[in-house]
Amino acid sequence: MSCNRHKILFLREQIPSFECVPGCHDCCGPVTTSSEEMARLPRKTAAEQEAALAELNCVHLGPNGCTVYDERPLICRLFGTTESLPCPNGRRPAELIHPLAEKAVHQFIATTRQVLV
Ligand code: SF4
Ligand code: SF4
Image 1 (spheres, rainbow, N blue to C red):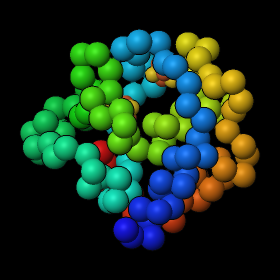
Image 2: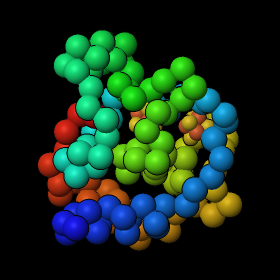
Image 3: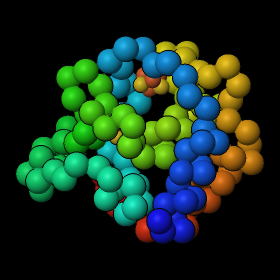
């Protein structure tokens, strides 16, 4: 397992989970992710990606919400768990992410090559 893969798994564990509004996708849109996370997502054609981007959507958004929920990028996981990325529908975990963990997530994103999902 690559070093980044270990980091990703570790960071995922630091991000608290919570229940979203079923089927909600209000915080979805074009996002970027590391190549390691990208490699675990289903491949989409250039045409599918362009169509999603044209509507400012994420290519993995389906009619019932995220179709890659278990493998969604770190930035998607972070959303709603910190005051800086609040859920517009008021959903949140019992305890927000620890500031050091949030900083580590942002640092990982800032120091890895990011690609458009
Ligand atoms: S975090 Fe909030 S806005 Fe985003 S999917 Fe969940 S309920 Fe919807
Ligand atoms: S990967 Fe899933 S959660 Fe993230 S923006 Fe796309 S549809 Fe939304």
